[in-house]
Amino acid sequence: MAAQFGSRLRKGAVTTTVAAVVVAALSASQAPDVTADAQDRPTAADSLPTPDAPAAGDTATGNSRYYTDLPPLQSPVPVAPPTIGTPVSRGTAEAGIPATVLDAYQRAEAELRQAKPGCNLPWQLLAAIGKVESGQARGGRVSADGTTLSPIVGPQLDGNGFALIPDTDDGRYDGNSSYDNAVGPMQFIPSTWAWAGRDGNADGTSDPNNVYDAALAAGHYLCRNGWDLSDTADLKRAVLSYNNSDAYLYTVMSWLEHYRRGSHEIPDGTGTLPVGRSDDGAGTAPPLPSPRPPQTPAAPGTTPSPSPHPQTPHPEKPAPEKPGTPPTTPPGPKPPTTTPTPTDTVDHLEKTGGPTLTATAGDTFAGRITSRAETKDGKTVGKVRVRFTVLGDTDTAFAGGEHVATVLTDASGTATAPALTAGEKTGTFTVRATVVGRVVPGLDYRATVTERTADALARTGDTALTAVAGGEFAGQVGVKATRKGAAADKVAVTASLLASAKDTAASGKGPYFKGADGNPVRTLSGLKTDAKGLLTLPRLYADDTAGTFVLRLTTPGGGTLDVELKVAAAQPSPTPTPSAPATGGATPEATPSPTTTPSTKPTGTAS
Image 1 (tube, rainbow, N blue to C red):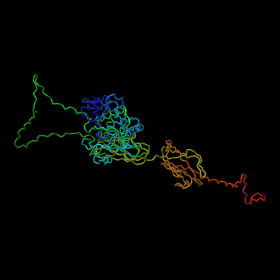
Image 2 (image 1 turned 60 degrees about the vertical axis):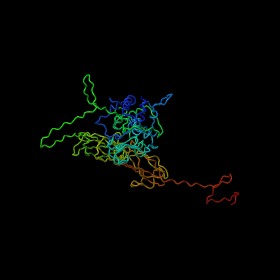
Image 3 (image 1 turned 180 degrees about the horizontal axis):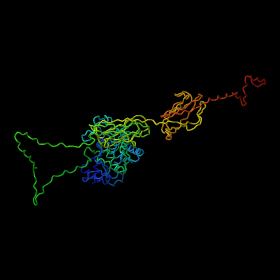
Image 4 (image 1 turned 30 degrees about the horizontal axis):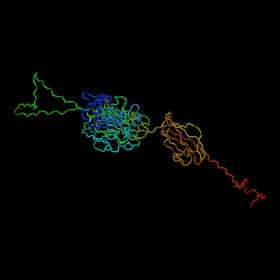
């Protein structure tokens, strides 16, 4: 019977009754910590309570549809084939993951192990989500760089059977300028990709249709909020934040356990594509039985007679109205009343002031960004989620390297963003505050990262720097940068070779550095001190110009150092004395100088 159920599940033709039975079976065999309720519906014991459950727009997928196919009940570990007949389990085939897709998952796990070691992200979790979201990028139909051969786009989230998420990307990712759609092998909605997107294949772009980018983004998404995925409760919270559905949690946990038991690489494009989807009824939990109306017990010894025609109650006749009074209209049904949530009452966000957001590269910003949620009449609103997103070409981030943080407003309606740590990229960027689950204008805060500075430079040696014209200077120049007496690390240093201390522009002759092509270079920028504030300059060379020159070193913050360079003139080479060509084996005689009197002694040769 279990094999029959597994076969039906793999074919995607699961009825709600079969799903209920399989849920009960799998909850005991393949989905740890996922249980079933009284009606055998999958539940998550530690799932988030309803008030804190993420709204559709606050999940990775917008609670879009997903594949509901479950893994086979048998272990994916290959077993010896039966002596007769055909094996029922496709466990080995179902455990196969296309090569490029598998590489993307494992590479993401390795990067998260370095970036967020406390998260303990297993690549099998990415594989489980990738299976449920896109069938492993449609069976691994990707190019060599991991980009899907055709876009994977979910249904538009227009509120018709799905969440209502108006367009947030002007159709850039999903081609839809009216509503958002989940996109790519990990099915991110554009509004989530805007802050969660990553460049996983180092091509300079973050593309939700690239499996390397999407897998790394999913890893960072699952590792936010300080979650430790080796902890069952945190693992469930992370999965539910991806798609807020207990049935989704159950399906992902089933595939996670399946891949943990064993998996292997298969060629790209040969993976199986699931068929059951959450929007066609497959894999959904069975509904609760409808309560039956109370029955009047029959008298003892009698058999209740069936009623062939159900009795329709007759409406009571209205009492006759008094003459001269207007007819009364029976009251209609009262419209259902709903209590608005705090988020529903927010009309706008207000900036609450604060210091100018400026920090030196590598430092923590002294100021914190704060926003206040208010109603239309200016009343503050507490318990509203405000999302702060770092935008622009910057490596500045919140704690843990995150570019997004969601904060609950306090009793005064104020949300305070976590402290920002400046990266190494200098310049201005934006932090945007938006209300989660409410379409109201966001607030933009401008922040600036400035260069690291040093207020002093000093040589680390005192050897005189001399060279002969056309030669090389002995030794290299070493310096130390300090700021208020302390070592200044990663400070930019500019080196210029000047004709004299009075000059400000580099000289066109004299000492020089060698460029990558071997040609003379007399200004070097982009040099940086190490963690101890130390820097050793490249070797110096002298052209054929003798004299005294200056090497000037400068840093942001006012650090300046002039180093004297001396080039001595080259000594002339002695003129060699020419000698007469040798004749035969005789020793050649010296050529007489013009003042020498020629010998009258016969030599045996013609004069």
